[in-house]
Image (cartoon, rainbow, N blue to C red; front, side, top):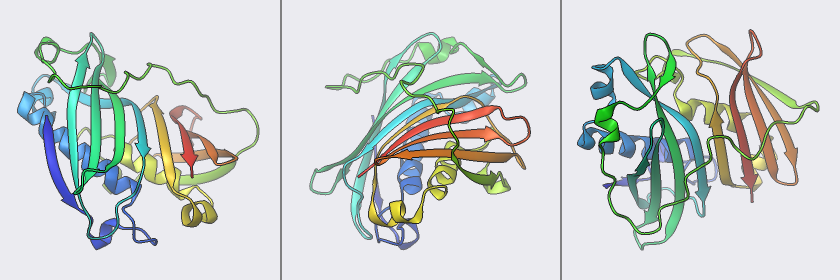
Length: 242
């Protein structure tokens, strides 16, 4: 189990003085990377086998966003390993022990040269997850939502150099940033994102032009990110705002 302590810095807070969602997800990603290194399944370990990690499913619930200067603890650990999928949970708590956020995720490995999903190699499948009480339920491989066919609000986003990770594709947090930037200002000022459910369908790369389609109904958003060049789906998402 990996446990890290983070303090909300000024550049990690939004216009309301609260931690930004992309920063929260970056904290989680950093802790997951450290945990993977301890297990011997970090990015460098996979690269030696011609493989890389790819996030397929992610469901996050945020109960409260910490404020500037507040210190939080992020814990993460793998919960189960299957032929194609490894599942990982996250929990974020305040200094007083208040549960701030929790997330479940599903990861796969892909062959770097072919850019195709492959079964988890044996050295990952031999991993023994820690014994923890009440792991979050494993996310289904396919979500229980899909984008509608009706006209949507449209926002365009070009993938730049600083959107890339070491696998040379767009970092998953950059997609969330694009999704958030597509939301109306009143949502961002007056509401907070309570739940976010992500289903990654394809990768994107430097200079790709993405189109974010958003449908909003009573505080619930459905989102579809597609390649501007060919309309190929990159991400489906569902957001719940309080």
